[in-house]
Length: 245
Image 1 (tube, rainbow, N blue to C red):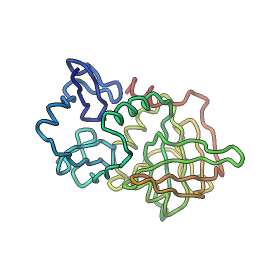
Image 2: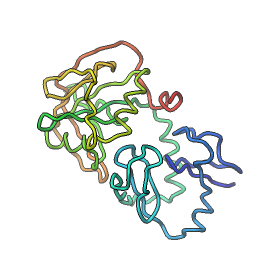
Image 3: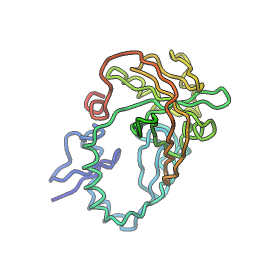
Image 4: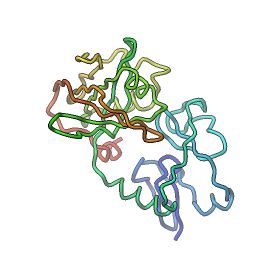
């Protein structure tokens, strides 16, 4: 059976034709390529480039002139290091498809450096322990928010609700290196100086106690030091976002 790869999120579909809609990122069949044809044209393993603004992955010797997802130029792409995990491409694709079934939320991770604020969309925030209260988040090394957290030792988490699609676009499809993401938005400043968005469900603040280098990302484990609740609505999940984007 033929295999088709989504050129936006790398989801792999099996069938005689590409799917009408990618179940992961929602793009149409025109964004799918036949894997066998790609391998026949380029038998040598090509480089992978990740957009530091929206995390789109481009395959090729050089980064693209324009990111097809968020529109930034090649200067916003970084070379992805190949991870030696002992898996074949087929095994890795199968496991990644299974991981798409894991349920998790969407958050705006914020931080502060030299009185400047920045934030980004993340789906990797989790509670680590309850006694003491600790939580963690994984951020790409190339992101500005990751730089802020490393230098300041603090991060804030605004938990998104089902009506916060606009915030995902605002914080996920542009870089804080180019714009002030918090300009004209309503937010509070907590004990750590991190901003919490008033449009979201609630806000938590953490002080970093441990930083783990994961290769392409840093994991920041922090002690939860403060928080505030704004709404009792249901939180946004990754699956709900892709179904309603």
